[in-house]
Image 1 (cartoon, rainbow, N blue to C red):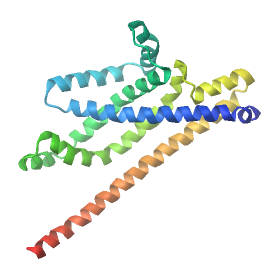
Image 2 (image 1 turned 60 degrees about the horizontal axis):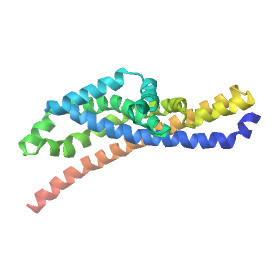
Image 3 (image 1 turned 90 degrees about the vertical axis):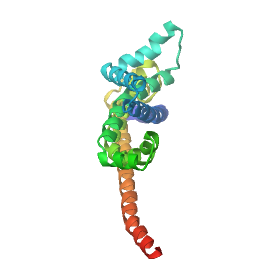
Image 4 (image 1 turned 180 degrees about the vertical axis):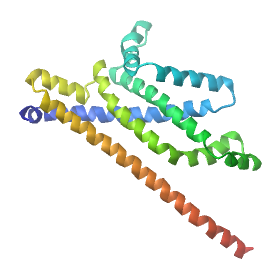
Length: 232
């Protein structure tokens, strides 16, 4: 384990880059997921068709190929991206395509009575989506989003192939110098595992939090109704 201790500072720096890539990729994934997912539910073809093409394209092509395209191929077309930008962009778009299907499927699975009631109240499509359908769908999306975030974390190791100095890149560097393979890669294996656990704990916390909010709302409704009777 001497190699791990000798290069602990290098590995910690790589861990920071991995966490940064994961956070930025997660933000982009969520943004892309809701934009593409909501567009795929639109009644307008000019929104629905490009969204469908985007989802199918990024799900149907490999993440590594996409990453290489952003970093190595785009410069030949006059567009040069920094390694970190190329890695985060590929991760966010790829995982966002999968998450978009979670958004679309979850919202579409809501009880039709919710939409009919909103229409009866005169709500516009945008208003009923923002006030009713999306808030009710988010708790159901969380488990699937948790899986996608863990997958995103594991895929961050690929950014080392476009010269981003993440945890995997630093471990390769230390291995090249010391020749210690088992100790170094066992260490980063454990680090990735603990990061995955943190994401799982965060998702479970959000699930409990949304469950408590829904219980509080359910308890508050009868009280409001009772107060309304006495006030009338």
